[in-house]
Length: 274
Image (cartoon, rainbow, N blue to C red):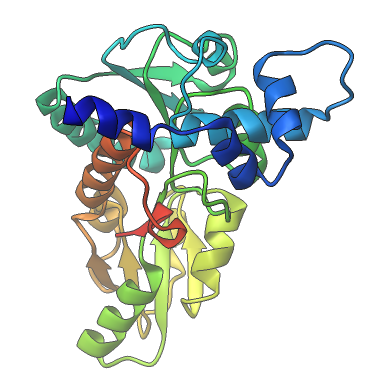
């Protein structure tokens, strides 16, 4: 009996959704009930639905936007990746699949363009290396959790998982004793490259061996890619952060479970640096 009372006491109300979305109760009601004749912008409608999902608001109308039942499947949204990026993300997705399997979830890979066509055949999405524009265009069409790996933007509604460039830089500088610390990376969204460039003295995108031949032997380089590390000339000072893909996979699996269980976390904890 007490558990029933607790559930009723903690149940999210339409007022809670309105407060979180910073709109009126009437606006929330119009959106959730799809009331005709109301001039509500598309941005407001999306915001209301996303907050209703985030807070766990339950009503018959929300069921139209959410999956009718758990599929125990997580979809990964992936765009075409060049060889070094593909090598890295294959390792990440293999580890992520293993971790989600322990939680009774399967993992499937969906092309970015195909992901717009379906909405209810999985329980959550994980996007890989999308620009902010690409992520928002995709996430705004979904009313189930969407988690971003290797995307840089500021929005507490979504879990974002990125490398801790500040920590990588400080460790390399301390251990190498060199003044100049650079990052060697595969193709990443422009916003991620910008965030790395704000920390490292040099950021070099590597697509082939020729990109490595002209590097400065007096610079200490950090890379997250085992493939880049393995083909680089031995004369270069390159440090491999070999656990990057595993740390991201672990953080993503944890974020999926939290999002599906609608566990509330401070907005700062939605940006996870590993």
